[in-house]
Amino acid sequence: MKKSRMRWPRRRACCGVGLLALFAGCATPVVQPPPPPTTKLATSPAAIPAQMFGNILVVESKWDKYGPYHFLIDTGSSLTLVTPELAARYGTDEDYAGKSTPVRVRSTDGATTLLTRTLLNRLDLGPARFGHVPALIYDCSPLSAQLGIKVDGVLGFSLFRDLLLTLDYPHNRVLLRPAATGASLPGSAVPFNNTDKIPLIAVGIGDHLFATLVDSGSNDTLGLNPAGHDLPFAFGPTEGPTVGTLTGDRVEKVGRLAENLTLGEYAVPQPVVELSDQLPALGGGILRYFTVSFDQERDRVIFYRDAAEPIAIPGIRQVGLSFDKTPVYWRVVGVIHGSPADAAKVAVGDLVTRINDEPVRDWDSRRYEQLLSRAQAIVFTFLNGTQARSVELKVRDLVP
Image (cartoon, rainbow, N blue to C red):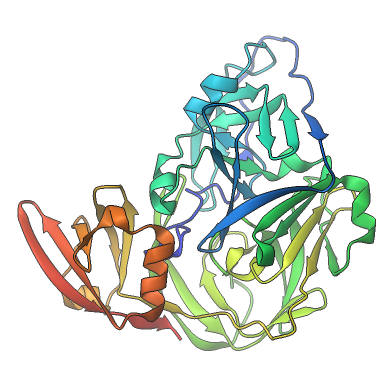
């Protein structure tokens, strides 16, 4: 299972919130619109510690007796999602235009679903307080199970429109500053000049240019739509894992490019890529090597790297399985053709109850990824109906 877009057993990290697009709803009575969101910084910069799960930054905040709360920051989403519990606790009773109309959103695979609106009167990130936050209600339990930590929401790019947002991957933290401070930041600035205020930047691969979404909600490296481009590959592309989105699963192809990726003045040698027919996206697998600042006041993304050593994007190691995770079992949702799992006749729908003779509840995403990175073989205990069997599966390089 790859990064959910998760790259642990291999599912999509964000439950499909990589790019949520707002669609027009049905006509509603004319009522007062919601007040504009408010933002207050008790200190500047407001520094919020974060944990890395795979290539995803998760921030923790505690401002009441029910916390701590955990949030993903998803720059690839135009919307903020919160759990029903958080919406019930901090949702307002204010009436405003369209409040009762479900919102149709689109995930990265192009499919749509309906979510209910809410307006939060409070959401804190350390010394930063947000008020009157428009959000959609979404059950984050699949994402929580995937990461092994309770997730209370996914914070979209528009929440930070009045701030300078910095995702400091090398130091595991998020920084929030007044927007005006972005003028003096070091690094290589890449513009995203578009009317929708989304971080869609131009990146280079050899002589090719791609309009690419900077998507901190993706655990992948680089998602590409190769249509119209004759891209040389050092390896592949080959059949990859099954990834999950907001509205369903899909199988992706993966490979390693023969040319470098350029981000402003920086070069990323021969990155691993995930191929699809969707919008190209720069995910956490590359972002993690940088401090990335989003300057919405000046419509630009600033990449900064203080490490001297060259970037080396690791390959993908696999046994050939993709999973949906629960605390009790991991359900197989994909088997790669020709993989060790395929040779062992593991089937979609089989349930994994133990890994190396330990219950799956003891294996969070980080621990499982560490095992994949170093193990030569892994023993899985599968349950099919009432029959249990233990199978040793070799770990191979799906993409060297």
